[in-house]
Image (tube, rainbow, N blue to C red; front, side):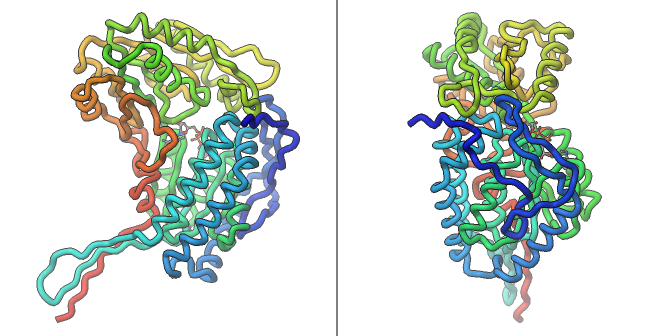
Length: 491
Ligand code: NAD
């Protein structure tokens, strides 16, 4: 089925979503543009302290009135399941809204992101009654147990690259654990999360448990981090912002944070990776998907010397064959960059890489377009370890290419001094795959694929400058609860 659509026909929500309904608040106006053609999509206001204050008040009221943390866990499951059903019923609308406002292609959002959003809500809904503490060994007449409890009100701040899915990992886990949540959308892609909040209210999630506010990072984002009644912060975004949030959280009541940050992830390709065309397709896809705007992007190709020339040639052929176009055209296979500012940043880093001694194998320029910002898939080589092309995250369709001679050298070249988010190893040799998976310092290692694919059952999270704490999985659920030790003397 083709989902090509006319963006003028899609209803765009407006306002903040607080206490179960849309709320208009005064504040600096921010115009949101569609990345495909840079035409206006809607205007939001920077909610700031007022929006966060109202959200916290709504959250407190909802927690008391619904007794959300105290009802039988299966009752929470039932409410969240209804929410998931409504998301699935509205998958076409949500998928189109997502595609219109972000760099996600409609071919990937309607049957992909939107349906997966419902899946993530169901996944966490099933955790409600699977919170299991433990009883620890003690002397007689003593009971010692460790229990989990929700924080109360938690906060979350999300980026623009997968607006619905990234947000759902957080709010679905937070709600399932018995919390209320105050979330800030990205100022570049606010609309799909607002639509989700509205569906939550329509499905019977008590108004005030899921509050979505719009605004800028240093104002509205900071207001969430600083608010004394918000007890924990779950953040996804750049390493630089993550550091600022950690610092602010430390000054605002020592509140716990989880940080899902940037990456510079290697793809280690061994000579025995398999049939060359299939390997080239897999490796190229891993740095071109979403026009490179993926945190786990496989942006450093480290290839065994004996296949390097042939693989590079085939990757370049794939790079030349892209079909850029609007996200709402189902035939488009290469996405726009989210904004002019991000386009300039990518191009600036590429030119700096060259000025510092790197060379361009392919790309290195913007693509002709009379509308949005499209950047050509770009492959760079001769990039030394003090070059910005190695030290900095492009967050665009740009990869570096280097070679290695033996596995030990390949593993060593895969390490990055700052980042440790993800890595992939491409080989048909199990022993080498496992050695590389053990040796590479990254929070996620993929073998013979790069990225998670449609499944979402394992935890995501990085090492080092890529952050700490997890999204998804049991660990991602437990991030939204705190552990309490109880010691009972019944002698
Ligand atoms: P960003 O850090 O600029 O912004 C992320 C969010 O933080 C936005 O909502 C922004 O408004 C807010 N923010 C900015 N400054 C803030 C402040 N001082 N206080 C509070 N909030 C603030 O990131 P971005 O450009 O939106 O996203 C791209 C980055 O996100 C890349 O580095 C990418 O690797 C990373 N990312 C990581 C993951 C992951 O799971 N590890 C997933 C997606 C994106």
